[in-house]
Length: 163
Image (cartoon, rainbow, N blue to C red; front, side, top):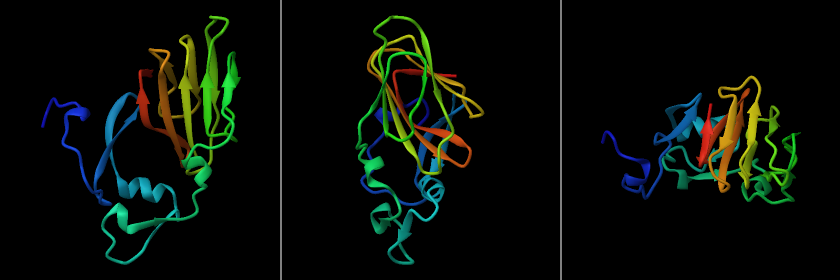
């Protein structure tokens, strides 16, 4: 299975707690099991029965569904600023065409945040994390982040450079 893109892999029809997913940390692709992701939420996933082996056998509790559905008013940023973690989405524009930095502060365990880059010349900066910056390569770029422990983890990224 060497040298295959993720998009070329056969689709899974069920997910088990030991199944693995790709994650990028410090520009290196690593694997993480659903069990590790589940455990990072603490008591957010509770098994229905002791033999629950698949994700479909788990029930979700203690998760703010407005974060999962990304409800609320998105933060719109057009100049140097800090990500507002009280909303689920940050949209970066650049009407002035001047490069600027957007700082990502520490979050709380289980927090999910989405950043859409609707313009170039924007850098998302994180301090004390496993990566230091995310920059768009297209005006349709995006990144989905999960905060766990003391770090932001990249769950998904599209058209960005990660350093």
